[in-house]
Length: 74
Image 1: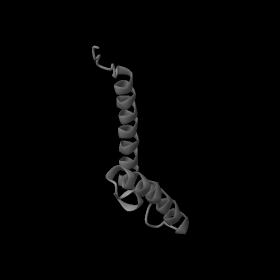
Image 2: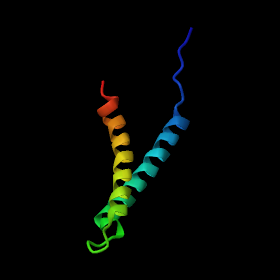
Image 3: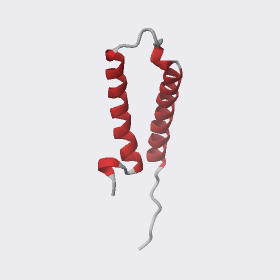
Image 4: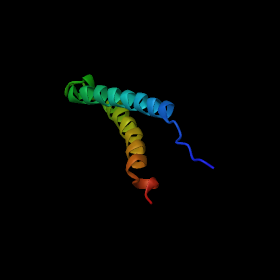
């Protein structure tokens, strides 16, 4: 019986495509954050706070999973 290496070219291509998409999303978020999410101090209201808390919660979910923290801790 001979063992044959599995061709993972399609999986690698899909992985790289997903990584590139994530990198692009992170760059856009970083730019938006650097611009204070397109707000000025005089415009800030509780709606802005709620929106940022929503974004933060979603990002926390992602980082907890990626770094095995929070509810994903081992």
